[in-house]
Length: 189
Image (cartoon, rainbow, N blue to C red; front, side, top):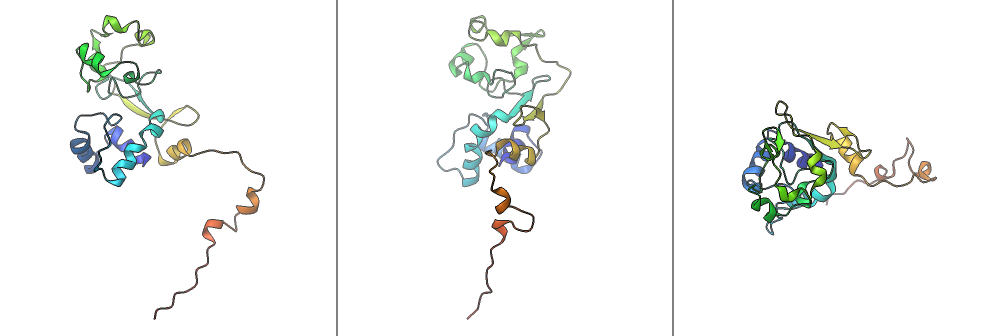
């Protein structure tokens, strides 16, 4: 499922991704779209995973054209929707689907003056470079930005526990318990 979320966030070129963006998301953020009561099992599972996967998806802003200003994690301080309400966004003249590039004017941030008290840490962020593209990265369990793979996602998302002393009794090269089931032949009558 993490792979499907990754494909949606990075807008991978596939018919399924285009269909989801055209019919399910319809100019809404993947992070904020509601789960409809009539959603299929798989779509509901993908949407329910958002809270678990979100901390691992980081946007490195280039020109800001493909990064949501409010809902994508592109600053060190998480997404801006945690600090600014929808009403404040609209009151400042922005829309819910604004991109980071829309927050820039003359190579400087175009923050409303009233936000400076609420977002002092965001005033110190350097404006994006208009000559580079946005890049979506996966932040692994150690906090390093790495290239996405299902292996890296699994290592980041799986529950971890202490290694127990008795594991060699159960797991060893000649015996894997979940693969040792002997089922006798069936008799057709």
